[in-house]
Length: 204
Image (cartoon, rainbow, N blue to C red; front, side, top):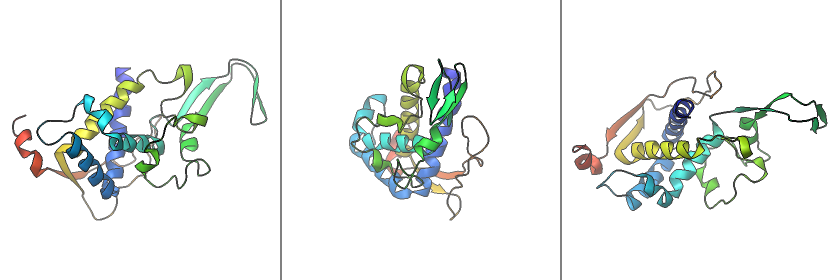
């Protein structure tokens, strides 16, 4: 679980930072939420996450657009029919999670990064619309750990630093080759400590 979750968690944070740099208004809104509920006298903690719903929406929207496991393998336990096709028992099936989570008939304007689509949304997995960790008995056992790790890591980057793109053009969002959907071009960004966090950071 630790080995499998490391690369995917890092990749998710890289995608999230890339999306935030391309959408600075979302980054400002996330910083404001953290400033309001956490402040500048201490670092963000796991116990803060219930008070940071917008940060959670950012992570969900990132994993919707760029799921860490875009194709999930399953094996049919018995003969069945899927979409009119006969599937024999023992057939290896690949669930196209990326295709489902970027389907315009399910998600309005799926190419737009809009964390607000998850605000106040209960039962977001209904109808198998959102499943970056899989679904059911064979879903990823590290989901809870991954969500906490990404939330604390991304939240700390947002809380402690000001971020800018290295150029005026937007961050490239091309997808690389691999089973965990890495970025084709690694993220490069400019960061500096936030003035409100200098005192705390100087004591770390």
